[in-house]
Image (cartoon, rainbow, N blue to C red; front, side, top):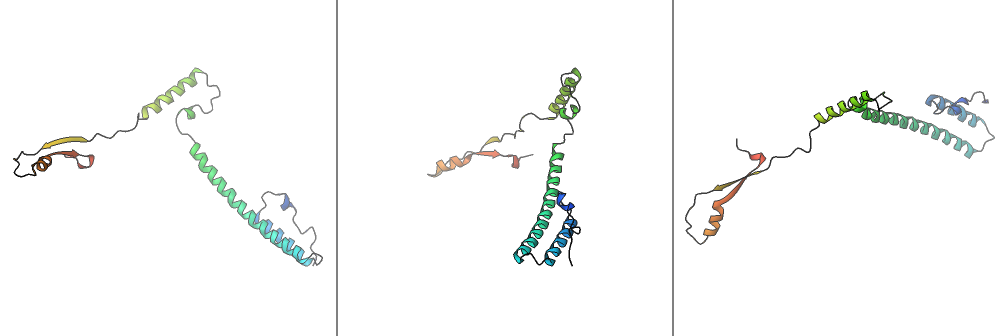
Length: 163
């Protein structure tokens, strides 16, 4: 059985990227034509079969990468979209020096300033309380140690507040 050039779909060579099923059918037709042709050496036929498999796998990988790229670009575009502020108000304006545009920008900036808290939120300082214990007369030689223990400084932290 002889395969003619008319059986091979050469339009697939001009398409970028080729459709997966069309590529597979064209490769099967090509491999069948190689198997029927006895004039080609065996290494040439093996090379052609491997190349057709390589082209199919590369085509599948390209399709996956294009899908991933489209998804990533969609995510980036949604991040870039502005919903409020002066950029949204200036959208579609080509002359920025007019009084109306300047007024719109100032209003948008004032609204954004009203919403923004200034600076970093501060934590309340820790309060120190001195508690004096009842004074007792020292009885022993370790009186210095007892005096230090009697006059202790208690710290009240945020986690142990008294109500």
